[in-house]
Image (cartoon, rainbow, N blue to C red):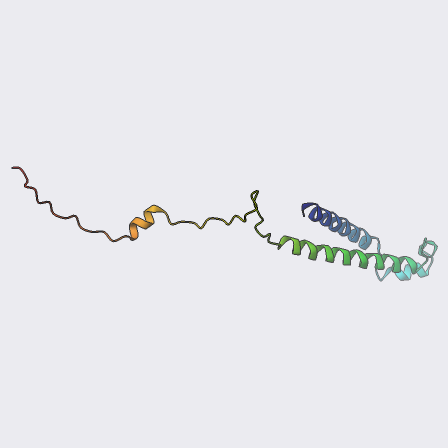
Length: 122
């Protein structure tokens, strides 16, 4: 279980870093006007609009991966394991906590000491 949790954390971290990088690479809405006047975007690897589609699709995929890993980590973190069989094959239940001795004595009724029948020397 620990290996799976570590693997999910690594995937989540890589997807988060990928989202940050891809968002920083994307152009804003005002950059389209500059590309129309030949700022060099049309000569890129994906074409004028191809890079925007590729970057936005990749960002959406990484965001989905990030969301799924977050849900998986939440599920794993809330998982409560059941008590398992011990070495001898018996299920060991935790002992019930007992009340301290001072609390038991404090709740017991206190009886007055009986008077002594022996004579007191003078």
